Image (tube, one colour):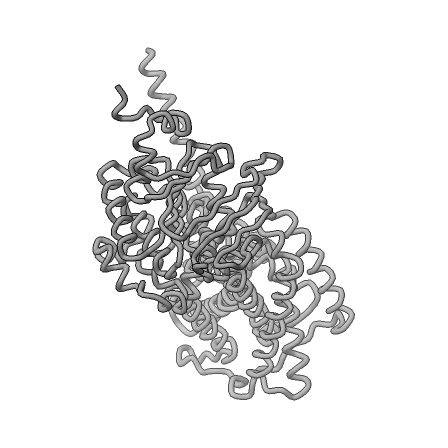
Length: 242
Length: 340
């Protein structure tokens, strides 16, 4: 079994008494996968649980590369090779662009091909803005920074939680292009999205989440052809509907 | 008519909001004028008040140095890490007494100060790990826990070191006074060294926060500790280190205070309040603010106790709180404070 496979079995998660993930089971990480679903279906909760982040309480089993990671501290999960681009980007407002990249552990930033220079090569725009306080960056630039700092930990699997949220359509297009480039360069993504267009453009394999469970496993091509499934699971009126 | 009413309504709240800051600036200016008049009103001759003014100013500056060393630790713990640590004063006094004990056992001053810093740092670290870490963000609980701890520490120190004020002998090379070269004045060398010590602490502190990886991680951790952790950084370890350093600085303050003034029960609470006032004056978590706050506090404290008319001299302690009220009237988040 490949060491980048994330084996999620029977995971329940709670906010107080709200049961958000309901014995969720799936396996991701072998290749780039998209998780899509409507608002409030537990997608972000799943991301946070995978990364060991608060506030949900979770039980069950999450194995990464064969080892149990549920209950491990967040920094340990990251060091094992999971990286995270969070919803809302969560940029540190007290740091400059450059400091975001310099603050990461040398050990992580030199264990693979992603170095500070490699991130600046990927995003020349960030290199131009390196001395600028990160709070002053535009939404698109902040998203680049959030992806850049996650890449810098040289992950085996990169989790992205709604990266397109709050970005202008042209920026989303660029983001989609970057994601496709990353995938073609060998980075494996777990893309959690509401934006069907972006998810299908980036990931071939798709999981659809409904009420804290995986309701359907499909492929991008199949889902795009299946108007009924789009309507049923995502509430989307298919673009080509007659 | 209607439009006039609207205009008066618009102006009135604006005026009201300006009353407090204006009053504060006027009062501050009056205080400064009073001090300058007292100092220079009788001319610049040997018989005038200038020599006294120089000595009082130096007293204020060196007190500011001591306050800054103590408050810089608190600005780290309370201002940056947001841990409500009301045992900072107890750690301060503990540092002083430990320094005294080491020196009485024959340890040289510098080494004794280092050992006292190390010991208070460890006590602070244990306190943080055992009692405070799992109450992160719960101000009231942390306040109650640290008040309890500081009472326990205060009583233990009273039992071991007694109630009689004692002082630490300064190191030999700083023992004789320095000739200032003006008005044939001399000033205790140790106090000047305390000022230099404060500058060194401030500079090191600034370099670490602004220029090193640890400083970046600390700022990131304060912004969003969960996200920092998700980037593979053990934030709790960094916070523990910061708590150690903050507590050690309280201990260093205690050794300085014991050498330039004296050590006695009650000083723990007094210096806790001084440090809190300095941190709040400067703005939570701002190092430059703490420096400026300490400077203002030291000077106001010394000028008011020297220049208030004799009948009102006992009001000098109150004036430092007037200073706090004036600054907060103009800048509600402190001199360099950011609103969060």
